[in-house]
Image (tube, rainbow, N blue to C red):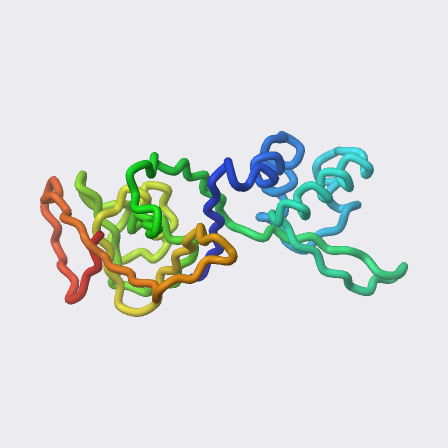
Length: 201
């Protein structure tokens, strides 16, 4: 199972916020999620919207990177097919970073705020309040409550994180280092199966 996620800071990506700030565009995105690869006419008919309205909103969504298009040959010439670029968009408000060394850039990423995943059972997520979703069900890794996770495990696969590049374009920097740390409080209730390997943060 592989899914695409987009994590944004609204202050840095107002184009994405604008793209989402419309009932019509939200309906278009929902339709493209259900029916990938439809053209403007199909969208207009399915949503009962004027073709001009659909076209203008598709342009805004494409400019924000929320959809992608492909041109294919049809019976009456070429047609542009539209696809949703992401399965989920997460809006993240950054904490105050005052007091951080001016020569260092530190980014704290919650363990559950991954942008893409592909895992196989046995697998699971756990928060301080207990198990998130269902044990050994890869689809649980798409649960919105994953952002509260402090522990994850899976047999095979990966989770992928996107970190913002906050460096000055002309700056020189040392090699990047990363570490996973933290302590997970004892979950409430019993956990019947404990995996061989876990990742905590």
